[in-house]
Image (cartoon, rainbow, N blue to C red; front, side):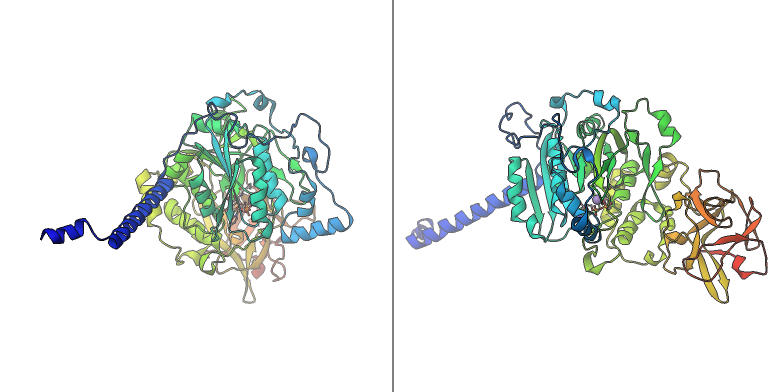
Length: 579
Ligand code: LR7
Ligand code: MN
């Protein structure tokens, strides 16, 4: 018996080595397991600020340009760059390939100066940098052109107080272009550890990319930027100061305009817009409501906004994740901006624009990357928006389906986690958001006589009233197009109890001698003296002129007109129906 025991307790040499190896492997694995766990569940580390680390913090050896010295060169002071000859042609080609003039951008210093467009009151505000929380700036990109991307990084590093800027994270969403690989790794070394790169080997889409970037961020504040921005003087201080004062505020800088063709930078010190939304679930700009003007007591104070554009935002990092980050099942592009806006307001936080913080953004007319989502999804905005409508909009989701009836039966994946988030956070109903955060929002099917698509039928051909994707606020003409059975936001009209013929916030009006010949119908903001119409049978009579709304030829894209009323003309008989 004791011999057997002895054999196990004091095994032979060979067994001894194997046992040691097994024990070693086990400990090794345990070490990695624990360490990885620690990595992904690490509580927010508070940066031991400035004191001990001053002098050898990341970025300390990077020399920032001295903007008090005058600078010359293309694009300096935010000037537009005009190319000529072959370069001009190459720039025009860029506009097709990149939706921005990369050749013009390449001419401009990565450190270029831009005008300080802040109001004077903003420039006078003093901050104690050492008592402000620190911030991680996350820049997400997929195959961005080099100079716009690097100018974003340079502008952030150059114009952020080193005491506040903890790090810049470049989140590479699976870029394929060669120069964004080792060359980028090498390049960022000049920032002396301040700029780090995280690469995804699968295409995440911008929503999951932001989530991943945010997870890696160490600062108390997380700031997200698009990869073609320029941060302006003093941009960061008012953002972090506001979040320090109100940790449940999700804030945005004022977005200045960088022209995609010339790279000219312009900004408005008196920014007076807030964000809204259309029922097709696109972001819109709206005028600051009178209630907000009354509430604010100073021009440097935050502006409450019902929604945000999406790309440029900052939040307390812990709050950002506590309130639900983003919906990780949203793919590639779109919808997350309204989703976070509705959610933050409904769950007790606020969306705010910070008037003293200005960041420029290159506004592109299209996307230079593949927009196809998982499973070959060609409609990522549509499916992302359905997810947000289902979770956050209660019965008002019907207004989204009015524009997109085709999505009613579409499977957009499991929503249970987002529903339980709403439950857990005890968020208010969407009606509360409408009544309190965006009062006066026109609800397409409330207080109306008719709504839906409006069509005439002539010789069996149906033509639908359609804004023809023209910019309605600019007083563009109203037209007709083939009725879109799948629904189309350009074709959803309401005839309100106030007898306005409107598409959301824009109203149809006839103006004699306005720009072109009389008789055409233009769309214009409903706040600008809207005209009334009378629905008589199926005729729509313009009260100002007594003329009837009519189609002309049965040609898609033709303008509608007003003509003498003739109830025998099928061109004048309009039917509203739900698409
Ligand atoms: O799959 C992708 N992966 C990415 O990393 C697709 C995009 N991206 C990156 C891309 O490289 C860029 O840096 O995501 C960023 C945003 O993409 P853009 O610049 O093509 O988007 P946009 O400026 O056209 O779109 C706006 O709406 C989007 C809706 O999902 C996002 O919220 C964008 O961040 C947002 N941009 C802004 O709000 C900038 C200001 C515009 C205004 C007003
Ligand atoms: Mn962008």
